[in-house]
Length: 244
Image (cartoon, rainbow, N blue to C red; front, side):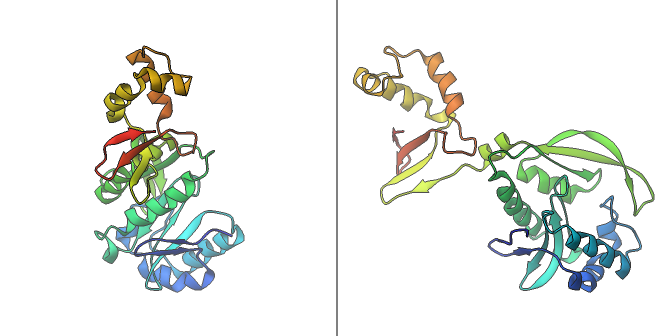
């Protein structure tokens, strides 16, 4: 069973057959024209057929996006990130909020592969959502659109685990400290600390005197990559670097 996901404003749950009428009522040409797999006109039978297929594969990562118990769109990872919202819910940040939660769920897996997505050229709303999430252009291709009954230009996009984790690092806060991944701006205070003979001798794996190029190389390996093998900086509440 797919996991249910709760965000600040949304509740994502597996869609069911009973959602067919709600889905049909939300689909307009403004939705279908940007989705290659969605036919137009869109009939109730299309919604039933799709939801029947979804329920026959309950492990597929597909969610109904709901707000206050009402469906406002769909999102899934059926080979790539795909989503749609009814037009009346555009411009409110719901697509980004839902997609960010789904991506966090996906990239929590340390073995997660790079994830694809894409948008029809001209679909500026979807382009903005994907850019905000960290997706990068990965070439333009042609794909058949059921709504247009013709091939359309599709800008493909790619998000790697490394880039996702770089944009979404973990943060821990205690009563007196901030603990977060070491970043490139920490070079100077880290060099000052590790250049001290008494510190280097206690740590063992750092030579004295310290070569700046060695520190840069090791800092690259320290960067946050989604797992607890990363190195974390200890900071005061005013963000002064005091250790790691």
